[in-house]
Length: 198
Image (cartoon, rainbow, N blue to C red; front, side, top):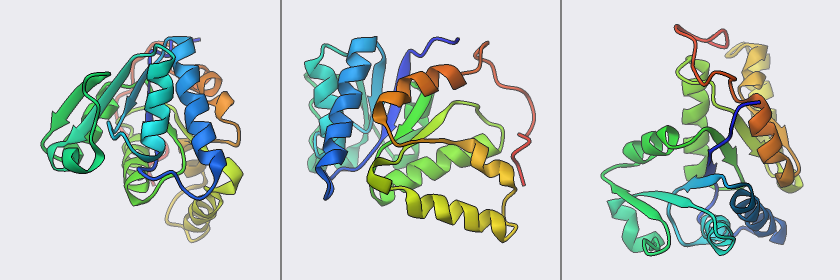
């Protein structure tokens, strides 16, 4: 089994309507701290982002935040408590988060979370990486997204192997074991396009 050193977490800058979302974020943050896994996230001190980071920091964990300069006045990152990178664009943010992480976890979130998730999935489809991508489907939050992926496949805009680009779990405590189990053993990526490419 490969070593999981860091986990990128995509999630909302709002708390959402269900208490279970915040509870899951806090559970994940505490788990990462306990397991010695670095949290890589969007640096915001609000919403589910703030919840996962605060829980990780309170547990003595290491946290890396990456935020575009234009968002620093809105999401107010706490640079005193974590390693903070202020970058020039959203694209640079995603690239640095990707480079600093071994796997990706997606909690409930909004359009920004969807953007980040689909870009990482597209990179994986193109064979640019083989890092695990794990969707945490709390209270069925991602059910419509999963139905959309199925529709894309049914309409022949993607192969059935598109479902293999990510793993779905309903339990946030399964994220770390899943990521560890799916990490490439040698940490390298095969050359050329992925078999998932349509």
